[in-house]
Image 1 (cartoon, chains in turn orange, brown, yellow, cyan):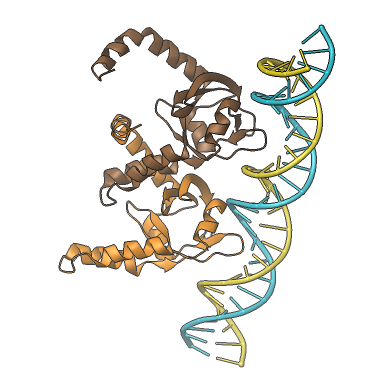
Image 2 (image 1 turned 90 degrees about the horizontal axis):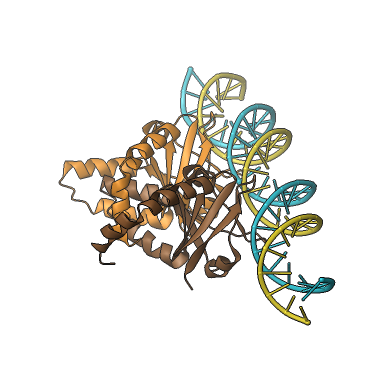
Length: 144
Length: 144
DNA sequence: CACAGTTATCCACAATTCCCCACTTTATTT
DNA sequence: AAATAAAGTGGGGAATTGTGGATAACTGTG
């Protein structure tokens, strides 16, 4: 049911990206793509998007940080639409934000998808993997 | 009831691995394969996995540590699906992580399975067997 | 209204995955 | 011991998936 896995795909010259077939049905009811954190893009099913949007607009309007954050997340959001081959067109501003070149990665993070530039993703993974002892300890805390 | 034992199997050229028949029924209700520790793979029954996943996604999205951890754990997980012969297809990224060549080992570790490359497994066994007394002493401090 | 530029829809190929059949080996039964 | 069943392994072929490109529809502009 949730999104899981790591898929290496290509972005073509038109900015289209194939969404792994496994994920398509799950977001056939509609989804939103927007700026994520750590220079990736989020793809959220509509209901998840609603939840996130509610949280965003609940942030204190008085704080300039949260205003800025809300603007970025909301202004750059756009609805996801598939072509017949199961690809989506990633809006140019989002492509630029995520630094997407040809090689991209689509990962499932339970209730959302993330789209990364492949280089960024491998860098990010290395960085976090190198903290593997801490990870092991956290796992212990989670009961494994 | 629990998973026990050590089974030597082969990975075929398509990346398929036979799961010992004894274990199949136990995970017929669904299972998840994911990155383990020490370069092996974990196969967890769905309920075990569910518990873990809930803890992972409960971590705050705002913290970069927990984002990283969730990404690592979830992006490298995948639902296990059997073919008619009781084999599963191990996703390529996981094969790579565990360094699986042709010869693999499936071991039962009570409430989970682990999949190892045979060479890694024998190396690991040698290393830990020779150190088992010391390990035992350390464990004592943990209340075993 | 024609035109260029963009966006969408469609088609075609290659690669992978999935599903099924068959053989070999090991275990179980008669 | 023979016969039967079950488990592990390999491979062929159909269907699906990912990718690139071609054509058609739409957009706004002069």
